[in-house]
Length: 458
Image 1: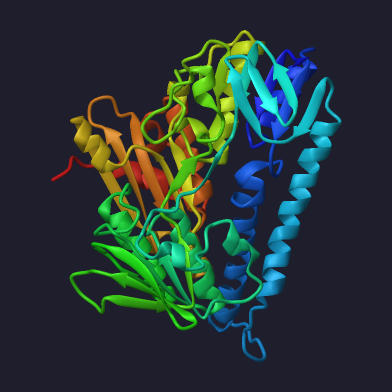
Image 2: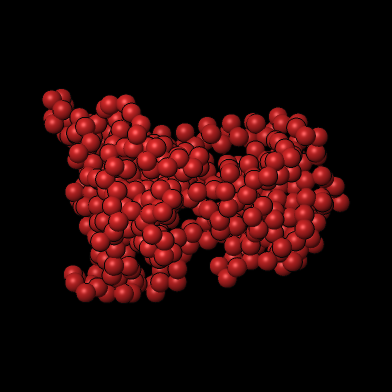
């Protein structure tokens, strides 16, 4: 048995940074990775998918060049092999940089293999037993594959495998109308595929307010993406070389025939093969490891960070988990999960930047509030760029004037929303923003206008 001061399972976004910090503090650290260093973000998430978003945007903008007075000779074509190679090269470089960083870190040993608990402070990796008084789980998640009838008989794609395609699907059926599914739907439609999105709900991205969902759908429909909503049951069967997705809906034909099917119906944590029961670590009904406000699990000396704890499913929340743990253990600081405002983006074009609560959530909480919205067509920067789709919306506490949440769907929305995030973190009131003088022409210059038009809901 090899003894360490700390063991980290998983080299995603939280694990490597924590390993390096602990090693620099003089702790002897083992970090264990069974697959690819960098986790989902670097290998199958943010890095390669946003590289593909960039390629899709380039193809889309080239097709619109004439609107800007730019003439391009010949038809616009997409080489899917080169698109994938570019995305994978960016991801590979990032992964290698992470590996080099860990391998050169003081007091840190990178081990390759599958870790399983054999006790509350003991892990087995292959033939080796490791022990440490502190163990940190950063094992991430993977695509969920529901037991749709017939799914086992088809060759379906997930967010990981679709990145390896070197040819363009003729007809892509996307199952799931949420963030991952919508990003890939727009990407492949802009590359030239026929795309239909099948969603069980009555609207896409149901966690957003209805007008945000409707605006996103309109944007994708203008790109040529079709939608089948209210799908009561979904099943699959082979139809020669094609795949038939059976959809029971109130309107439309029951089948969608595709050459390829992408399953984008959520994620599940990588906790089912860790031997958590041997350590006595509690999970919820979906398999997420339960943690407290400092990311401690039910077992003293064990923490869970990143996607596997169900307290955030993003790179930035995983990294913030590392910051919380490091601050409490090494810096004499006090940081908590409850200090964090929910913030994320949907990387369609234009993107959605979202922070805090939606209007529906505020209403459900029973809080008095004021709300304002403004179409991006009024924003000078959007008009100058020829990208006027979308809207911005803000919800403010009706008594304290505190900003409760905002959605910026439009050009630069994923960047502009940070101004409101920082205002919320700093407890800046809506009236303070109303009185500021922003730069023109920008997207964020309309935040004071937005705050000046706040009204109680009808």
